[in-house]
Amino acid sequence: MFKALRVSTIVALFALFPVLSLAQGASVAFGGLKQDTTLPVEVTADNLAVNQADGTAEFSGNVLVGQGDMRLSAGRVKVEYTADGTGISRLFASEGVTLINATDAAEAREAIYTIESGEVVMTGDVLLTQGGNALSGQKLVIDLKAGTGVMEGRVQTVFQPGKAKN
Image 1: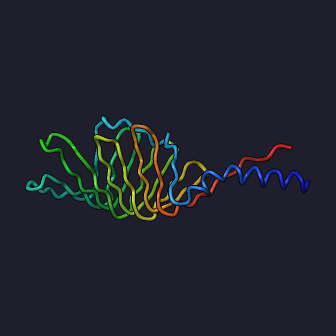
Image 2 (image 1 turned 180 degrees about the vertical axis):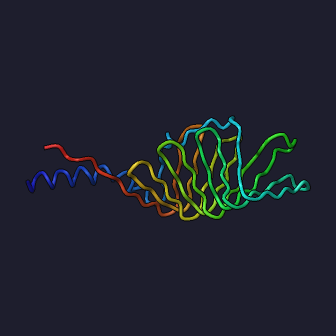
Image 3 (image 1 turned 135 degrees about the vertical axis):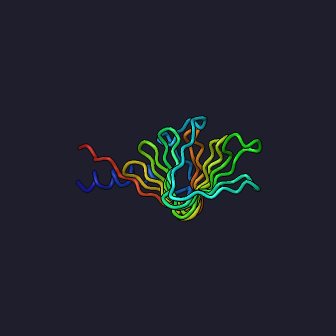
C-alpha cells in the first residue's frame, strides 16, 4: 500500500510539474470559450448613456452582453464604436466581470473585449474555472477565435485528480 501511495504521489507531481514550472504565466486551453466573433452582440442593462462626441455608449446596472453562446456580465460596460459608426470596436467591462461559455467561466475586476481580433483581456484577481479545476492570476488574455489563453501574474491552480486504479 505504501508503495502504491508513493507511486501515485510521484505521478501527481510529474503531472503538475509543467504548471508549477510556469508560476508566473500559464497557457490554457479555452475550448469552452471559443467563439464566433462575427455574430451579433446584444447588450441589456438598467441604464444607457450615449456620447455622440466621442462615439461611445455606456451601459450600467446589471449589464449582460451576449454573443452566440458567450455571456459577459458586469456592473458597467462602455462600448466603443468603429470609426464609421456601423459596428462595435471594443467593450470595456468593469465592476465585477464574469465571462461564461459552455463549461468554462472566468471572473475578474475588469475586461476589454476587442471584437475584430476576438481578444479578451481580463485583469484584477482573475479566476478561471473549467469543470472542477480552477486557475487564478492577475491577468488572463483569451483568444476567442482560437479557444486559447494565457494566465499571468503569480498563477495558482487547483486540479481535481482522477481516481487511481488498483
